Image (tube, rainbow, N blue to C red):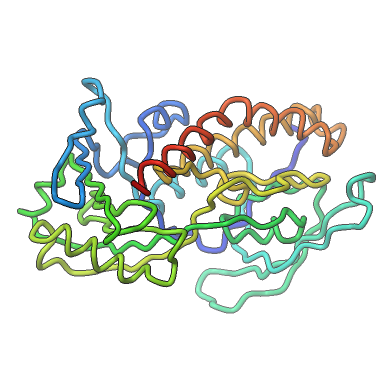
Length: 331
C-alpha cells in the first residue's frame, strides 16, 4: 500500500533454461498449487563412473518429494499472482539503466530505458521510466548488476536437452531422477536426467572446462544409454550458473536477488528456492523500510535488513556445500 510496483518481463511465455528441481517446502511456503509440479520425485539414484547406483532418495520421508517443474509454468503462476496483488507488468526488454552519480547520498531517481513490446509485434518501442528503487531479479547476466557496478563472479555453464522418450521408457522416470558423476560427464559437477511433464531433461555443467560442455553432454547421453534411446531432442538449453555471491549486492537503492546476486548453491546447483526466498525477503524488508511509501530506504538500511538476514539464514549452507563440491566432485 502506497508503493507502486512495476515488473519488467521480456517474454511472457519464456521457458528459462533450468533443471527445474524445487524442494517440497517451497510448494507450501509460497502457497503454490501442485499443478505447477510436473513430477514428484521420490527416488533418486546417484550413479558412479563404474555404474554403481546408490539410492540417495532414501532420505526422503513418506509423503515427501522433490518437485520437478517447467519454469514456463511455475514462473507464469508466480507472475500472474503478483499482478493479482497489484503489480503492474511491462512486456519489455531493459536495455540500460541511468544511475545518478549521487544515488548513494541523495533521493535522485533512476531511469530505466527499455524496449516495450506489444502482442503480435516483434519490434519494440523505445521507452523510459523513472523509479525510486530497483530490485534486480534478471538472472546471471543481470543488466541491473552491470548498471550498479555489482562486480563479476565466476560461473558454471549448464547445458540441457529436453528429450521426448517413449511412454514405456518414461514410466521408469515416473518418480525417478538420476545424477551421474565422473570426469566423463563433468570434472567438477554432475550430469542429470530429470523427469518433466512428458519428457526428460538431460544435462550437465562445468566451471573448469566450459569449452568442453558439448563433449560432456554427449557423455551423459551415453551414460543414460538405453533408458533414453530413441528419444527426440525437442529443446536445447544452455545458461550460466553463478558460483558465488556478487561482490556488491546493494548499491544505493538498487538491490540484487536470485541468480543476479549469485544465490546458487554449490554441489547441488539449487537456485530456484533461493531466488524466490531472496526476492520475498528483499521485498518485505524494503516495504517495511519505506513505511507505506512515506520514505526511501538507504543502502545501509537495506544491507542491515535484507542482506544481513539472508546471509544469517543461508550463509552457512553455501559454505558447507562449497566444501562438499570441492571434496566430492574432485575425488
